[in-house]
Length: 249
Image (cartoon, rainbow, N blue to C red):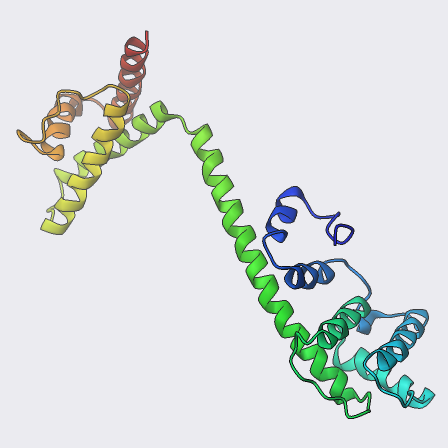
C-alpha cells in the first residue's frame, strides 16, 4: 500500500489514511493512470489474457479457457468495460475471493456474465470510496483555506471595510423606506460592525441600553455626511488606523 500511495501529496495521503484498507486500494488503483481496457495495445491485451487465465484458476475453475473464448473475453472487456484496468480486475477478484462481495457462484464457468458481475460490484464500491475520499479531501481543503484566511486576516482593514459599508447603508437609509424586517437586519449588521471595532478598542462608549446600533452609528456618521462619500471613507480609514495605533502604543 505504501508503494501505491507514494505519488500522492501529503494532504491526499493524510486523507487516504482515514479510509479502511479496501477503500484505500479502490481509490488509489483508480488514480494510478494504468492502461484502461479500451485503450490497451495488442501487447497489453496479451498481458490481460494471461491474467484472465490465472484468475480463472484462482477462483477454482477447473476447465481452462479455450483460446477462442479467451480472445472473446478480452474483446468483451475492451468494449463493455473500457475504463477498467488490469490491476483493478485482479483486485476485484481478490476481494471476491475474500468474501467482500458476498457469495458469487461461477458454476465452473469463467463467463463474461460472471466477470461483469464482479466488475460491476467493484465499480459500485469504488464510486462510494472515491465519493467519501473526495468529500474528506474537500472538507479538509476548505478547513485549511479558512485557517489560512484567518491567519492573513487584517482586523484593522476588516473594521474599516465594515464601517464603510455601514456608511453606504446610512446614506441609503435616508432615501429608502425601511421595513421592520429590513430594520432588524440593519440593526444586526450595525451590531457586528460595532463589535469588530470594539475588539480593536474602539467604540467603548457604545451603550445598547441607551441607543441601538443604528442610532449609535448614525450619530457618528451624521457630521461626516457633508463630505463626499469617498472622502468620508478615507476619513474613516485614517481615523481607525490612528486610533488603533494609539491604543497599541
